[in-house]
Image (tube, rainbow, N blue to C red; front, side, top):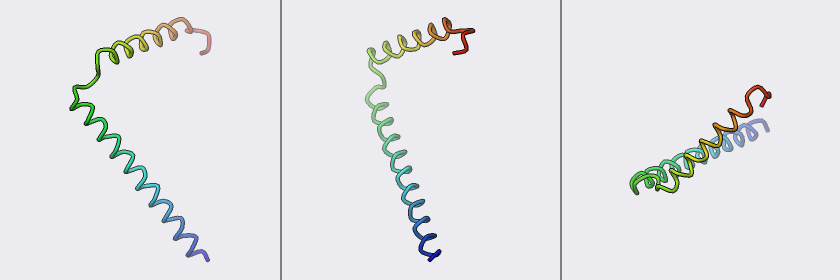
Length: 67
């Protein structure tokens, strides 16, 4: 009985490893595709700059409040 359980455990671990590998593969392919397309658009860069500025302002305002 324990042999069956061990086999099922190894099968689940293997399936999880394959799933993670496929996720990494798809993610890297999407990043490469985006880099080949010229990277960020100007609007995305602008949104990122605004988000970073808002986060910095929030951190500055919340200093000393335990946040």
